[in-house]
Image: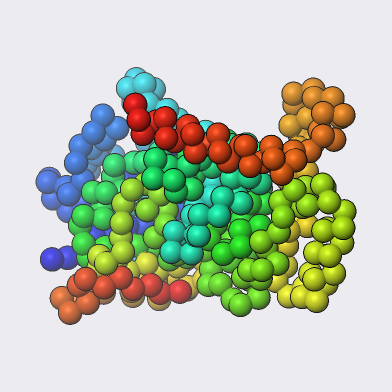
Length: 230
Length: 120
């Protein structure tokens, strides 16, 4: 059973011929006559063949790394939408922040979670709390410190950055709630993107202004309103 | 009504101890109960798998996965609420296998129906 799960196959263990699970094109029913106690590799090979014959996508093609929002904590400030480089976030028809493009999210990058003032963004596959969904401590919140001016964080205002650094120096208890680390992770993603797309360095140097970031949020809301109207 | 047991294998990350996953899976098989074993709840939530709603409808639901806050909002991201249902979530990242099995194999408690509890 572990081998099947490792290969991306769900398993329903049932005791009679009327399982609670409903059948779908992806269901393969196995009984003792199918040699389910036999060699796992042979069984998986048979299932892979069936999967291919039915035109189903292979398992494990994508590591499901994406932000998960705790809406009991989220205040809809849209800071994550502004911060994310890859349009993972969008706005719903009722103007609520949403994760809309999970597959756009860069694997192992939890940067947006670090700058959420309410610790409302989780990455369940991240190693450390509170980003992994663990309980949140008072040190994790650092709410006022996290409501940073995004344009200052992205390099626009050196004086604001210096003021913020002074405030942060007073508390270094929560290593995961670190906007400098978030910025470095974002910059790592930028460098990789630059290399992949052959973007000139001077283009990257022109980081977005506060107006551009605001425009991005408004454009996302406009797309959501348009979608609601169609 | 017997609880519906859901086991998440977290197949695409290494954050749940392998020994715990193995012991829980073997314990479920040995117990002779019906259960659902899925490769990865995150993956199911990302593609809005309709199976999540089917499972949530089979309260009481016992889930062996990871942090309850993460599991609850993963279901929510797929449009499925397990809040207010009789859903008990055992965290295999922090809880020993025998304790996970004790929790998810416990008989359904009619008094507890309607509550959502979590075991970390």
